[in-house]
Length: 286
Image 1 (tube, rainbow, N blue to C red):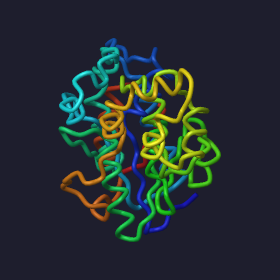
Image 2: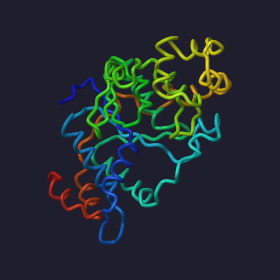
Image 3: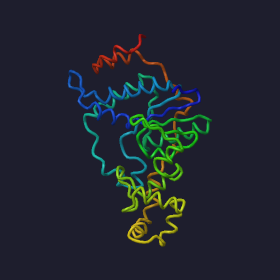
Image 4: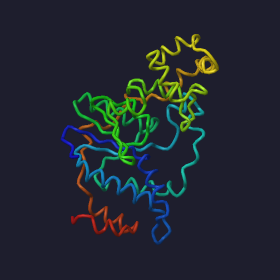
């Protein structure tokens, strides 16, 4: 699929990098430096370039440290295991490879990569562009609209409005309400205890929105109704934590994210250091 000049590709950097790390975890160079995540990430980005040939693109990474959600809720992501040291060691060179391949590399402290991606996607929409978000993170489904599509290249799935409806049973505009009801265990964000996807979808179809479910909380019977009423005090915060922020001040606009040509010399230097012989063969001449 070849993109036109009115299309922006945004890659969720750590979604790609974690996938690469687990897929090629045993690879290292002769000095014992782990290199599998870098190798997998570079190959996935090359496949994206081959398949889509974008003009505008960026790879967005989280900055280490606390984000504004931690200020709202100190327990946010408190259940996460530390990033494996073998992956941490590969992050700086991953950044170099990404940039040498011509991708703008974006990071913003205080917010998450999701928020940077959401902001750029909305800016692109306002500029009349279409955005393709490449990530395995289900939270991005809340952004899907006629101008924003979510692609999970790992599973070869593509979520437009109809795709979100088919996958979740609700339209994109109800995804935040849906996530608020079921909670997000991966991020340690509480929802309504005992409420899973089927109950959340049933309530949203019956009442129309999270606000309407809350308004009818006293009428919902049984144990699940009790759990809903117990959750009412924290549901506004849960919704705020799970909503992607789309007004982050950024130094780049979508039209400033032009893909650059390969930095051939830098790629050769990195491929030599990392001992990626197949890359050395494939890198075009300067």
